[in-house]
Amino acid sequence: MKRLNLMFLILGLSIIFFGCSKDDFLAPGVDQSDEGTISLKSAKTGTFTGVCTPVDPDNGVWYDLADDWRVTGTSLWKFESDPGAAEVFGTAELFVDIGKPNGVPPGKPDGVFRGKWEIAWDGIITPILEDDVQIGINIVCDAYGTGTKGAVKGLIAEWTYTMNFLFADPNTFFYATEGVVMKNEKPKTPFSGRCDFLELISGGDTIVLPNGKTKITGYVSKWQDTADDWRVTGTSIWYMNWLIEEDGITAKVWGKADIFLDDERGKWQLSFHGNVTPTDNGFKVVDVCVGTGKEGEVKGMVAKWNHEMNFDFSDPSTFAYFFEGYINSKD
Image (cartoon, rainbow, N blue to C red):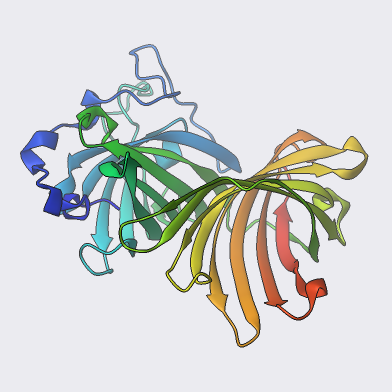
């Protein structure tokens, strides 16, 4: 995800071409003016957005700038996957600072160290094609971190990093980030239930990649979520992307979702990623979702879901997800 040698060096990209610092980029939706400030939040649950820009990408050094100071700072990324792999994974460390020029409190030095995250991550790299010619790469990675030092110690966080890098435009060489910070020690309310298919809204766009894999984007479907907690019971709309192996079953899946609670009691927005694997008589799907309550009685809450489907081709009734998870209520 983070090193330039994964940016398809076979295409002749030069590290010198990207010799820039965090101050050379402006993050969409992140105020970088001298007047901009990041609210110094306490250890509360909250979502964030931001940008991750290269500092020394050949050595895994990047800068994460977000609208939450708790996930703003210098990040160091290490790969554990094979060089050049399309499916990548590894570990990272994020050293939290104030995030100049986003507001330094009186008496605090520029760039003061405020804490450390230890992170595990995984992702997918796919080519961007135009008229069957590769013009860039798309990278989507999910990261999971635990605060181990300073003001973030005891917190947990989840990130999604997305890059759409066009070879002809060096300004596209950055990641847009979004995620959630949660209290690790906060009491959680567990739930369980099932998710049943209602209808296909859009089959999306399908591209067969040069490596034989198939990528589907914009796949949209509607489901019914029924749980033992009304706060996660309702109609869900899933916006999915797939990277399917040549066997036609094994796949990575990721995307977003909205859950509209019954009786108009609220709405969740989710991000998710998962895997599809073949079985003797069908396939198995396992995914992880993190959601934030955006409207109604769940506004300000955070929840996590683990879904699993074991579909048997001979039994249509098995085309359903069973899920379990927990809700973190408002602080």
